[in-house]
Amino acid sequence: MTKAIKNLRDHLAEIHDLARAASVLGWDQQTYMPRGGAESRADQLSTLARLTHSKFTSSKTRRLLDQAAAETAPLPADHDDRRLVEIVRMDLDRETKLPGSFVARWSRDASLSTEAWREARQADSFRSYRPHLKKMVGYALKAAEYYGYEDHPYDALLFDYEAGMKTAEVKAAFDVLRPAQVELVRKLAERPEPRTDFLRRHYPAGAQGEFGMKIAKAFGYDTNRGRLDVAPHPFATKFGRNDVRITTRYDENFLPSSLFAIMHETGHALYEQNVSPGLDRTPLSRGCSSIFHESQSRLWENVVGRSRHFWERHFGDLRDTFPEQLSDVSVDDFYRGVNQVKPSLIRVEADEVTYNLHIMLRFEIELGLIEGKVEVKDLPELWRTKMEEYLGVTPSDDKDGVMQDIHWSGGSIGYFPTYALGNVMGAQIYETVMSRRPETRGELARGEYTGLLGWLKENLYTHGRKFMPRDLAMKLNGKPLDPKPYLRYLTSKFGEIYGI
Ligand code: ZN
Image (cartoon, rainbow, N blue to C red; front, side, top):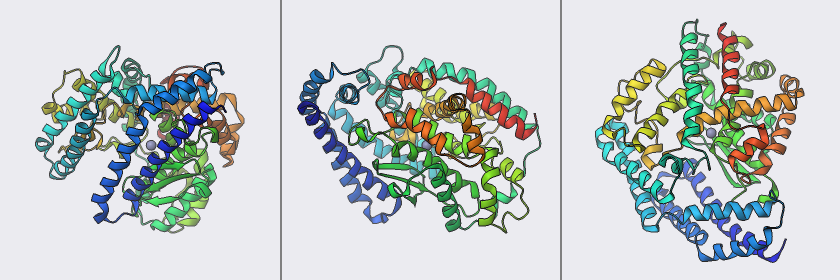
């Protein structure tokens, strides 16, 4: 490593350490912090955010970057140091496009808006939330102008979550998925529902956690470099590649809640624990993008964890853990039960078949707002219309309708599509693994996960954020994001479960 590259890496490492320290504080805030700590914690987080931002956008970063660029230019195109310089330059250009005063106003109004959303949601009063949401849409539009875009202002917003992806690509994928998924939901609704009564028996939290962690470890989650805690909204977080934490929440009267949350967050954690050590303490030491990250949480949670193979292998263990609760339940009952498809109002509780429809509705609304074709005041009505059209259910209030998610209140517009496309990418990657490494199927049936994890490590996890999402998709699957594998997966899995 030359001097210029070392200087750049040292500088980035300090910025990285500040950001990871903020992650520790954020994790603590969601898990153990007493309520009284909220105010000082907000101060601490905002100080760290300010320091991180000013250190990163300083002239020093640009100078070190220019010096390192001269030395990395002759390196191979995919060399870690060359990519580091290129990606950091991309981040820096983007971060310096928004004026500091604009960022400060936006972030202050975003916290007020989130507070207003919390209260409005509790009171089921869209009217009191409306002016805040309108402001957030205004900020997003203004940000898109500052960032600049070629085709669509929404492209500029998507960039934060999926760098380089175009609105037109999202639309194209959704246009393939929407009719097929609406049709599948309709067909499944005509079939008898699977039995699910046993999922709502009493399952003590302690035993749920133990079983969940047994699975997480079987998948390959390294608990010497991670741990599980309880949080109201499950998440995974990283303090460094050797400390990647997961959280879950327990519902003692609904088994799937924590069980699948642990598998989901384990998927995120496996990705982060296996990024190449050579990228450590740089902005490249994390997953490539929101779509890639969600592809892994969904792959481990759903494609693996909700498969028939999986439960044929692990149901015995689960029944040993909960002998009374599951005494009258067969593997087949259980497998069908945890794969029940039922249109519902709430996105985060949706099953695999209906989930993407919740997302498409949000994407269409976001697009309408950004294009100026939809007004904030019309959202509750528009929400109900689309829910009826896609899912055949309509919320009776706005609390479980247009106000159910936190995202818009904080100004996150452009995030939602990556959830649905994460499902799509997960199925696509799974097809790739099966064709390149056919023995994986047999291994999964035997409850062996090291082969699958090893392949994903070598071909995806290790690269961290070194490649642009589109390039990584090409490297991995030999083609760009494609909705067809996901539709094949849904049709064959749920066709078999529901006998169609
Ligand atoms: Zn996730």
